[in-house]
Image (tube, rainbow, N blue to C red):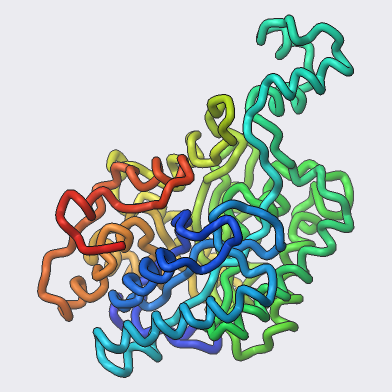
Length: 419
């Protein structure tokens, strides 16, 4: 089954190997397509997976460091050139039909604001309410400050979903729809809406959402904005452009969304007409480690982060119960929406078994394809070379945490010619 085609709404993937979005930190401060970005994604394209999801692209035209953006029409020409080059290189290496068969979508995202930890500046602000607090030790600070004040002092300022105005939330569907139209104009096959991890849309969906208006609290209220985003995007791009999303099967933090509620969300998304649902887990700020002074909190440092990006101590396919439960709920509700699962799937045997068992419809392999972009060609027998298997040491994750260009340690250890 791994090397059979599958229909995703208006497009057909040639195989079930799915490259999920991974931040590379290879853009620049303007969020542009750089030569390094082109080299990375062309290399992935040469390996001919069924779907390549480009790393998360910001939908608002604001500074976000060396992360790709799709927040203005000025980004469209370079993205169009990238998509064209990826298809051309795939065809040159794998035959003329493969370029057209390769499917490529960007993941589009909205971020909440976050700042680096700066205790001195925080205390200067707090002194307006607590005179003399600059001389307190941390025990006295924690005992006196409100929980929010303590968190912003100890971890750095981080915007919460409760901080957004109703107007800011109501602007999100328009931002997502405009970004999706740009993706369509750039020649992508669709878009993946980022409803996962520590970011705006996932924070709206999460059971930790403590808003007291019609965007928080109840299941229906937390779904309100995500469904409005889906509707706005679909209305903007039409039926001939794939619209899918990535969501959490579990928040993996106390008081967060569980798999039972996530399955209900997935049914609502299927009913709204999405063309695919990609299931991840964890990666939340609530249990993130305290950052060093001058650094920002990183949502993959706690237990929820470890469950999102596991090490070699986790068994292969450890997260399959999440896409399995979501797929079962979506099928029981009468929808055939394809479900993508991920989480330390590194061998064709485990991938094939998961497909046959009905755990998922497509197999997400992020670090597996980072370690070996030719994984699909090798597993299918089209390339007679051994697979360079990911070791799950999370050397790549450490680079991501430091906001350094993300690479695989196997590249230089085994002489891989990769960007």
